[in-house]
Image 1 (cartoon, rainbow, N blue to C red):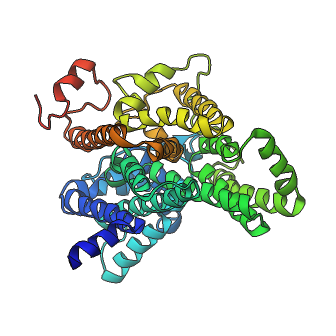
Image 2 (cartoon, rainbow, N blue to C red):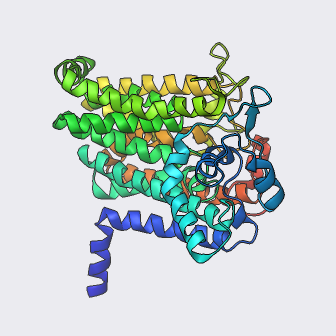
Length: 441
């Protein structure tokens, strides 16, 4: 009985579930990354190569032309999948299209790996297995940070403990978030998710107790998340969501934000962080700005909204079906406050329009809609509101279906890693053949 009592107390502690998610993530990383002779060298890959390159460029090679991309990455480490992330303006000026923010998020873990390598007398070239392992740990850290702040935000909404646990743990394991944390850990999304969760929490704290110090922190966090991915600035669209009406939001802004002692420090913090990218461009190519993505762009007159949300190729609701219940939650929310769910829906449709207008709306060889990982917090709120009000038979049915969705998503992560679920060319027939089936049909 004493053991059962301790287990019950643990289950009632939200941080136990965060620790459990951390333990599962770390165990997965140890078994399938650190101990695998191939994968231990293949975390810093694809876009992650470009994000990461700033760190060895600045702190090992003193080479912002990234010459080590050929000598160290390509020639010395053929065990790592090679990517040439360098772009040339001319024979002398070289830059990478990837933004600086993710490398800053990596940096404490990079410095740890680099320090250990030098202390132990290992090869400290920035690309041995310990550096790859450090990036996995970095992604896990930022994802756990996101889970903690998700929980704090749902507490503000008065969500029941078990609902909070199911929603947050479900969001992590029942979407592609876990995969991009523990497998393709060098991509920017887990880092954005952690910083956005912190940003929203401190916005809510600021709402209840405005201060210059909090304004400074909010400006810094907004600048940081923008430096990771400039399109992340769209997160500000959701801010009116936390007020009872748009009029209340405007009134609050006039009273507490549009004041010099608040607005000036916040803007200074924001621009100080964002300016780091401009300084980097100046150091690389001797000009303050360049559209680094060159020929890649948005086609706003040709959005693929339905494909982005529902196609078998990458559809968000196909590969993260748990969040279908978020849409049901809007109706429940509407009964309490008409403005907030309508603003949520408008913001959701707008960011969907933006993301689906990208020239490669499926975002390459990826699993599911990875660009929504940083926005799962906003899907979790109506999902939690929906589950929080359910009772009786309907509650059991929805929870059972939710658990099935989460289980299938975990299975699909395995299928994707094994090539059973194709990274780009899925069809409904293929999906039907492998549904709840862990091996190649």
